[in-house]
Image (cartoon, rainbow, N blue to C red; front, top):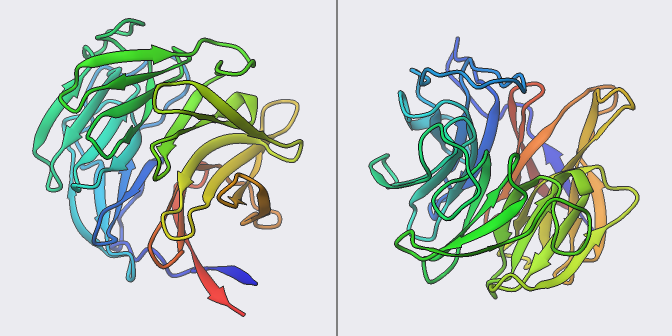
Length: 302
C-alpha cells in the first residue's frame, strides 16, 4: 500500500519572505510548481479593495527544493483566486476582485483577458467572482463562475463564448459555489461543488453524468485529475456550527470515482486546504489559506 509523508522542510522560501493566502496552485510540464497568492491582502467577505496588489503574486517553485525560481504578477490583480497551467505551459488565473480571467505565457506575458474589470455580470462577456479555469486538448476552456454566479462557462480557444450551464441549487447540474474545475483525459469536466459537498461530472457539452458525494465529505474546495494513475484527488474542509474552520483532508478516488481514502489532517491543527495539484511522481501539493502555507505530501512505498 502507498502512503504519503508530509515534507516539513518544503518549500524553502527566502528568509523574511511572507506568503500571503495561497489560493491557486498549478504545475508545468517541467514539474515546476506555480503558486497564486494574495501577498498581504485578505478577503474579508465584504466589498473588494480598489487598488491593485503591488507585490509579485505568482511564484514558480522548484518541485524538489521548494526554492523560488521566478516570480511576477505585480500591479495586475486585486484578489487572486485560481491558477491553472495548460499543456503549452501557459498560466491561467482568475481574480474574484476584478471578475476576470487572464491567460499569460509561462514567463508572464499577457495573452488574453476575459470579463470586464470590476464589473460583475451573468452574460457572455461578464463573470461574477470566477473561481477557476480548465483547458481542453483543443484549447477550448471552461470557467467555474463562481461565488456570484452558479454556472460553468465554455469558451473557444480564442476566447469566444460558446455556452454555459448551471444555476444555484443542489439538484443534478446545479451548483452551490462551483469552486474549482478540472478535466480528465477524455475531456469530461469535474466540478468541485463546494457548498454541496460533492463533485459533479459532466460531458464536454455540459451534460450531467454523475456525482460523487459521501456523508464523510466536508466542503469540497478542489479536485484534480491524476494523469499518472488516472484517478482523482480532492481536498475538503469542515466547519463548526458557528462556521469556524475545523480542518481539512485530502481525498483519493480511483478512476471510476470510488472513494479510496482520506488523509492529511494534522491532529489538533486547524487548516483550510484551498487547492491541490499532483506531479508525475505522485507527490501531492496543497495550499492552506488558514495558515498561509504550501505543503508537499510525498508518496512513500511500503
